[in-house]
Amino acid sequence: IEIMSGDRADAVAEAARATGIVNWHAGLRPQDKIELIAKLQAEGRKVLMIGDGLNDAPALATGHASISPANAADVAQTAADAVLQGEALHPVLTILAVARAARRRALENFAIAIGYNVVFVPLAVAGLVTPLIAAVAMSASSIAVTLNALRLARSGSEAVR
Image (cartoon, rainbow, N blue to C red; front, top):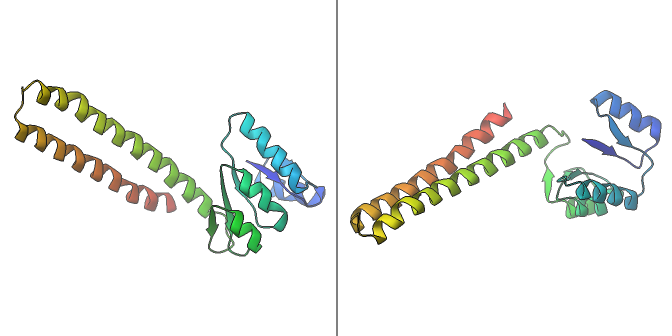
């Protein structure tokens, strides 16, 4: 986590101390923020930019993903991928938790689908199972993928707590 701000160094330092953020930059112009994001991306990082001001809009457009609060400047909201309702930033933690859970579920669903294809398709092609059994196995695979995906709703509600 880094703070990239156009504000004065003393104000940014105080905000960084209060939040426990070690890496912070003050007095940045929009181009400086873009360069810092590009540097992080060159290091292989996936950048989530959160900003609310007119000078944040270019950086919001540069990050892999971006969020702006509802009370942000219109141009920041337009540049952002998502707009938070309200002024609090704690929903960002929920967004990240749900995104991680969605990725896990997608990978699990790929594994389920591949497992079906590796086991039942060759058996069906070889004639070792009847078409009915292959169809039932395919339906079971689809049901398993759907039920696994539904677990995401529970993951999201758990992340809020």
